[in-house]
Image (cartoon, rainbow, N blue to C red; front, side):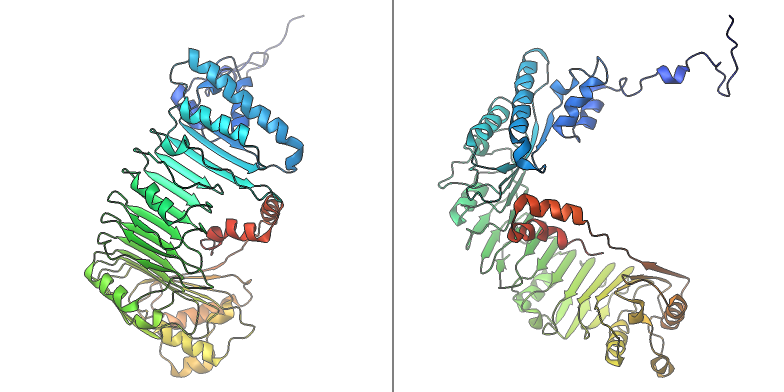
Amino acid sequence: MAVKKVKMLDGSKKGEESHCAEVDRISKLSDSIIHHILAFLPAVDVVRMSLLSKRWRRMWYSVPTLNFCDLIVPWHCHKARFNKFVDNCLKYREIGMRYIADSTITRLELVILYDGDNANLDKWLNFVVVKNKVEELDLFIRPIYGHRGRYCVPKAVLNAQSLTLLKLDGLKVKSPLLVSLPCLKLLSLREVSGLNDHSLEDLVANCPSLEKLVVSYCGDLSTPQVSSSSLKSCQVELESHQRIEIEAINLESLHFRGTKRQSCETSLATCRSLKSLSLFEVELDGRWLEDYISEHTLENLTISGCLGWKHIKNIRSRHLKNLVLSQKSIKEVDAIIIDAVNLISFTYNAYNMKRFFNISLNSPNLLVCNVKLLCECCTYDTSWYVSLICLLSNLHCSTNMCLRVYSEEALIFPNELRSFCRSLLLAVEHLKVKTLHPLSKSSDLRDAMYWLSPSLKSLSVEQLILIITTIAMDMISLVFGRQSYLSSETRHITYIANY
């Protein structure tokens, strides 16, 4: 019986396979591109990709990046299987190294809960570090809930000649350290126990190529002195009463965070090349900081919740381009003069404040002004609106402004105030308003904004929706078990998670 062939829209006939369906475009990609794609996947998914085709069957043997993650609940049910999987992966990779050129592992990311099993960790790291020219090593090894011990960084890791990136999170080190990392450019130490002042100083001193350093909540530090002529970027987060002195003549960026409970200090006397400086909850010598800003070529400055605000009266700079000031207490500075002719972006944040800084802003080239006032008031009274008027009356240099508030009520000025107060933002032409609380009086808000800025050409009003990922938070709490771990793991996220 003859089969009737019907012509399809693409020109093919029914009963015939389309030519497009036969083309495997992914398999035609070069090995380097496929390796780059697979580098973003966990190792278990990379192995599964070998089932796609004959060409992919041994492709994973030569993927330069391996990513093993053990944070799966319930942990106790799969631990043995996970260990076996890693063993087999590394076993076949070792076999592949004998027959496949350029099959060495250049990056390893290991995320695992530690239960005292040193043998497997030592074996895996020894293979990757000693038998491969590993360049990047990212180790997140935290003790499982109920286990107090921590995994100690092997000597082989601290003497890996090819390493350019080393991240240690939750591990421990033993003094004295024997370190030789001549090619290391990025070093990150997060909650590393046993890291005392001398250990940190030795570690940095034996990394002659180091360009970026991250030290975060390492509780055994006291008053370390970090000295490096190659260092360009530094991020430091200290515990209570810790102090750090940084000597880095080529340092360009410093992010320094203390703690709300107690003061932390830093000394930057020799850092004369800074372009970006961020200070969070640290103890300031206000007068010294004023002089430092005026005398150096600082371009980006962030100050938030710092002790010593009251001594900062003037911020004067010909080089400053981006400035962020955050107020978290009414005890902080009352008045501040900002004289920065080349400033292009200014941000002022106030958290649960009804009285704001008295800011005098002289920045004729300002392009963007951001004001964020997070005050969860049930009612906004006259004192709130008067303080807001005083604040905004001095922020009229820019034609673009963004106002972020908790509720639209915060910006709907009473008619009584409008009747005897002049419009404040005469130069503003483009205004964005963002609120956390649902909008219910949009027309009143728009009227208030056009009174506030009569020269407006565009007005944007948005409600920002915050999605709380309870599943992710529950996963973290299940993994670490204790609230202390949860807070320490998420604190550096919550600082930047503001809407």
